[in-house]
Figure 1 (spheres, rainbow, N blue to C red):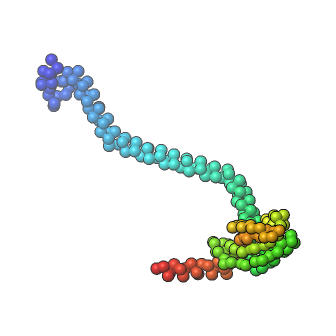
Figure 2 (cartoon, one colour):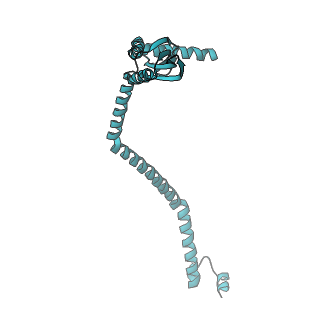
Length: 208
């Protein structure tokens, strides 16, 4: 019956269509309208909404990060101040180049006060780093076990940084001979930093 109704439909006289056909036609047309409306209008709006939601999430995450930083800012500032203070203390333990001779005298006096005999005190070649230089000093001292131990303790107690390396101890008669390399450090002044920078630039130009 429905097939016959479809064959006899007059497209120009919709009012004469049977009610079931009108209902089906209305549903189909409505579905088409909804589909076209979704495709041409709603889809773009949904895409825009999705982009806005992603942007909102990114902004929210950025806000939370900055909020956390703002909350912890006093702690970060205190941390920075503590680091600067520690760096200042370390820097004060590095003599400048004019204080190196005084430091060598302190090292010698520390040994002599413990009864050691100095057979060699020979500064080596400086090794430059970014903001400080290392000065190796070859030392050869003779004394008893306790005198050597006290000397090493005295060096560690100096207000300036002095470290010992390549220690070699051998018996000499009733005493001990200690050969070692004392490493002292000094921070570079502006003139030395400029000189080192010029030297590095010359080396780079030579390599080219």
